[in-house]
Length: 117
Length: 114
Image 1 (cartoon, rainbow over the protein chains, first blue to last red):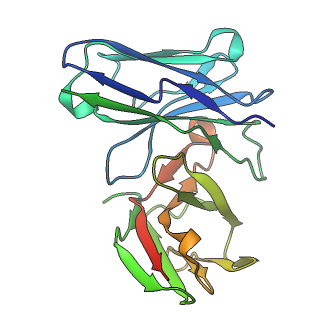
Image 2: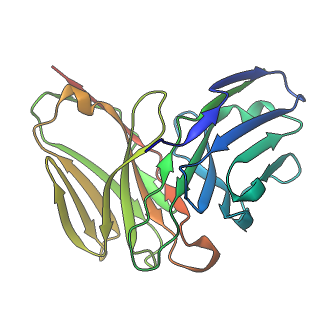
């Protein structure tokens, strides 16, 4: 079974520029997550999709971050304009579905490491 | 107060040692707890998943949840250099729109030296 794919793996931009990350979840997984992991910290959820609908985007800085999941499969996360504090690893994860009363493993991709200069 | 608190370490132990990693959490509504392992420049991978209180064992790994003290632990027996990684504890949202949402601790960096 192929894992979660992300691209690019690394990106260096200057502040105020825009950047986009792409994620392809595991085939058949209904739920997709984007996390931000700042160096030395645990991942923080930015947005959660169920199929192509947003379930939770309460921690997404909507003035500069946007995300979409077209046709309930691939997803893109965009930052415009970028700030220095956006330097982090952006992780995409997917799960089969949030299953009430049971285990629902989130599988993570390798992440995109963003450096904002 | 953070929802999940974890000592970042770093923790350095000799090969074969027993490792104890710990987290505390602040909201007693949560019932699902996980331990993820993250190697350098990789995404986290699920190591252990526990529900409710008690112990869960998987090979050299034991996860323990104490809901009365809001304390979760991971024990690694006979630690190996390949166990060197960052260990992240996490809790899963209990319901509603937060169901499925993981809240992570800061992560503990573990090094097992030969």
